[in-house]
Length: 453
Image (cartoon, rainbow, N blue to C red):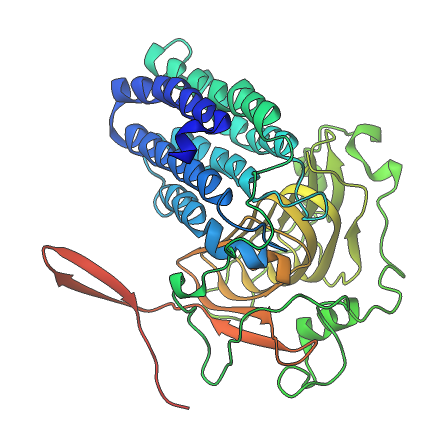
C-alpha cells in the first residue's frame, strides 16, 4: 500500500510499462532467444523495483559488503543474462550480449554515496549503456536493410536506457535509493544466503569492515603470511605500501595512439614478422599464440591496450577514466596496475599475470588464461571467469557483493578479508564439479562436496 502511494514507484511502473512494454512487443515479433533474453531483462527491471520498495523499509547499509544480501536477487538475474552469452556462441549473440551488458545499468540501486566507488546514478546508467551500445549498434548495422523487426527492437532497447532510465533516475533518484530511517530493520540478512563453498579447514566469519591498511601485506598472520613465491610475492611487494608507484612505467604522450604517426593501431605484417615462434607454456591445457610487439597504449581515447608484455612487473595505467576500457592480451609473467576507475577490464590469453585494479563500472573478465591473480581494491559489480585454469581472486571488503560467474574453468580460489585477524585472508574454493540428479521431472544441480581434512 505504501509503495502504491509513492510517486517515484508509481513513475517507475509507468516508465517500465511503456519502455519495457515496447521492447517486449518488438521481441515477440522476433521470438526465440531474443524473446528469452528480453524476458530476463523484464525480470531484472521488476527485481529492481522490489529493491527500491524494500529499501524504504530498511536502514541504509554502511557499505556494499553489508548490502550484498539485499542486492543478491538483482545480481542473480544479471548472472542469468550473462550465462545466456556463454559457451557455444548462440544465435542472435549480439542481441543477447546487448541485453546482458545493459543490465549493469541497474546497479545504480547499489549507490550508497559518493565514497562507495560508483559513479552517481545518472552517470552510472550512461556509462553502462556505452558498453552495451557496441553490440546494439551491430544489430542495427546487420539488420538495417534486412529486417525492420530487429531494427525496431534495437532502437527500443536503446530508448529504454537512453533517455528512458537515465531521465527517470535523474528526476526521481539522483542520489540513489530512498532508505528507511536510522534504527530501522538492518539490511543484512545472512540466513537468506547459502554459505559459499570453502576450502578445507578455512574459516568463514562474517566479513568485517576492511582496515585502512593495504589488502596485501607482508606482515605475518597465522594462515596467510607464509612466504610466497612467483606472482603472490609480486602482489605482496606491490601492496606493501612502500613506494608502490616507484619505478612504475608511465604512459607518456608519445605512447598514446592519437599522437603517433601510425595511429591506426594496426600492426603491419612486416612489423610483426620478426616475432618469435609460437610460444607455448609448459602447463597442460595451456594456450599458444603468436606474440607480436609489446604495447601499452590508449587507442582512440577510449580503449587501453596492453599486449605481448613478458616479464614486466611494473606496468601501470594511471591516466584513465570511467568511459575507457582496458584490454590485456597475450601477456606472460607480468603485473599490471590500473590506478583509477574504468568501464571494464578484459584479460585474454594471458599466463602467470597479475592484475591490480581499483574500480570497474561494468565488469572484470578473465578469458582463456592460465595461472592469473587478480586483486580488486575497490568495487566490481560483475566478475566473469571463462575457460581459465588457475585463478586466484582477492576481494576487498567493498567488492564482496560482486556477482562471480565461471564457465569451463578450474582451480578458482577467492580470498576474502577475515574478521579474526587484521590483514588475514579466508580462502574459498569455487566448485568445479557438480552432481546432476533427476527429481520431480527436472534435473537438480548441486556442487560436489568434499569432506575430510
